[in-house]
Image 1 (cartoon, rainbow, N blue to C red):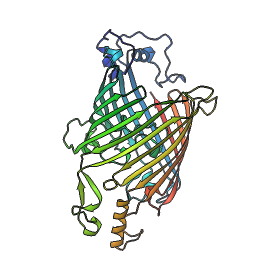
Image 2 (image 1 turned 45 degrees about the vertical axis):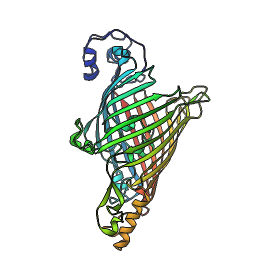
Image 3 (image 1 turned 120 degrees about the vertical axis):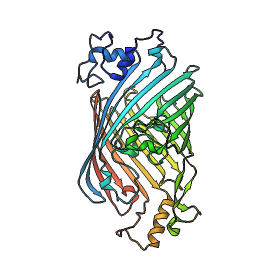
Image 4 (image 1 turned 135 degrees about the vertical axis):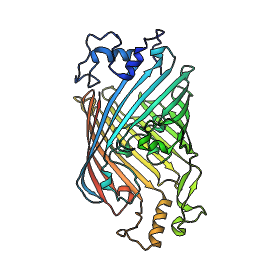
Length: 451
């Protein structure tokens, strides 16, 4: 992380303040510090008498946030219940620019805790016998528990051309990164981790190492090594730091290009991953025969792989203001069809920031995504149902999953600098790819606040 070099080392209490929040260490206060709940303040709790700005100037950025997402089923779904579900997330942490704070060139440290709670309406939309292929509330999942989400240190050399990052982090922090301007999971964040059980998105963190090398001003390549430890998903292991339960290592590699087209920013990613963790086959047994026919357990494959492409480009500006305008994003992922229930995903979305001169920071978003079930996963269900003479309404029937299509239309209201309210409407065709389930229409509301 680059910044103004400061040779003066701060008093030890500055670090204490970064983590304990609010402790007094004798910093000078700004004369015009924002009050709590001020509309033009980036924080709901204000500038703490100027302390927060002083900390930022010294490289310490306190992070306190909240995201809440509700979803109401208007029609369709598995049981047609018109219910509402709510899920939320709190986060607390600090990003520290160690160049500003300690004079360490191109160095940064991050610590973050995350707490999730609530329920998902998809339990009502989907056939409970089917395997999950998405969610209308991207914030819900991974248990109601507090977790250590980030604990890492990064250091750059040669004017940050070479950068190494190590510690506890998620694959989605650096690889296949996408914006999160929607409530539906199909349009939000790094997609491979939504479908591959050895790739963990935040708030799950893993011991990991990431090495990035900048080939030019617009192009860089990076490679990572992430510990695959399924026990870290357990609610009791939110702060687990030891390696007990390690199943293998995930190796992602990615090439990123960040051009400026007509003076408008773009970002294009292509990546590949290989995991050495064992993965259960979705069709064959240990003798390479259909497990549904033999009755044997599915075989264990000793690795899996896949790749992704992501493209994001701002297409327009408003009155030469590049902070406003239309941005298009398209992405696709492709996974092992032998070991993953979802073998491919494609998405395109459009987000217009500042659609009205009177609302320059509001956003209008629309997106459509296709989530496709593995042909081998589908074949296993068809084989099992045929052998047992089962139809959809019979007990023991395995739902035959095909493609699910998700769409979302939303409008993000930037009520204040610290509060965003985003009503949204989602339409899910073939929930979880099961054609016997009625298409669902869901009304959502997302609230985001920075404390």
